[in-house]
Image (tube, rainbow, N blue to C red; front, side):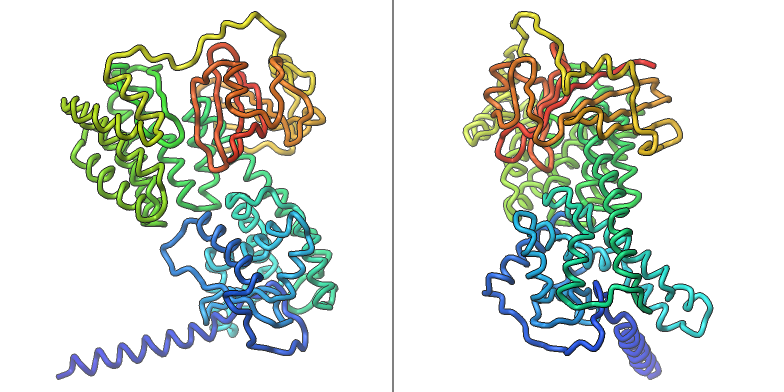
Length: 552
């Protein structure tokens, strides 16, 4: 007889606590206009403004890839009060029409400006800044509550929202947007906000200064991310793993976890002998592998693969509909020779999730892996049929594996039959000379671990930058000299920005690697020229670089 009363009392207690929590969570506005007139008039979902805002918003949500918690709804409001706000009570992000219009004044960067404002509020949500606000309001009688309610603490939250929000904007494909101070200035002007320090906010000039510093930190994080991708592309998986892990310490997303897992898988594959890696697994960041290490190091390779599985599980926990992580997990199980689990994750989890959530390439790659598993288990006729069907659906990987199955000789990189030509140069500098000079900006040095350092020179030439990974444990230093966007020069074989893939292949032959990235593709040449060509989503050359690996 006492149990129902206990349950009712517990329910009442939880309900009371939840209501108190909702009241205390309140809102986290971008800014609060004094004496604003409140309104509840919303712009309908059929209006052009809302469609534009929700399109940008959805890209940010997908790029964050964290679906452990419900995604806040987006409301566009006819009000001049808070610019933009994360409302924890209503579980929504409110964007005001005037703030939308201010972002629209940035011309061809209007989408990026809008993304910056929305990402700022999304970061408040994902980083749980509302919890601290609620804690403060419930504990204002304590010294800890007073200190957490300080202007310095509020500024720290705003700075973190700028910093991580900026990286979210970048990872969603809006580019490296560094006009945050200009957006703030226009917002303050449009809202007729006081520019001096107030009880709740720093001065506009201080907010602009913090925004600039956040942009500098964010740019550094994107450079670590770019370097991780490039190290993966050229096969330096050990360093790439550390670079991705560094990002993970400050920014968690399904893609970062997935990339960590992929680099671990690719690293493990280097411990396999050629006979064990007869077929080319559909691991997203690399389609080829060569045995370069002690093939007897099986315990180490198994450890790497099991570590990769944990990273793929973390990606899936963030987004259960992220099909690439299921496929990569299946590849890891295939390398562990656990073919039953590999078939399940490829044929059921990866393929069905991919078809349901619009990952057509992942669905096709799942078929390729099914064919590989058939071949590994001696069902060659079935494997041949699977590869042929996938190749007919435009899978180069399936066609490659079919040739392997049929016993054809596979060349990983087209031989270079061209006459010897002058060394590759960027900004009139040959990389060998650059490495000798060691000209880096010491202020931008990052210690990723106690043994691994990231150096760079963002202005090695007028249109280029230098990235350096120095690993004192492996005793290897990797140099990457990259063109900047808009580089006016050409390669030694007259390839310039805007060239398509066919033109590059015509000049340099087929690459040894064709690596997919979040923004396009990286073509890697290892044998004749150590070069990388970075293509955009349209298949056009966006940047290129020369790389050099040296023993210390």
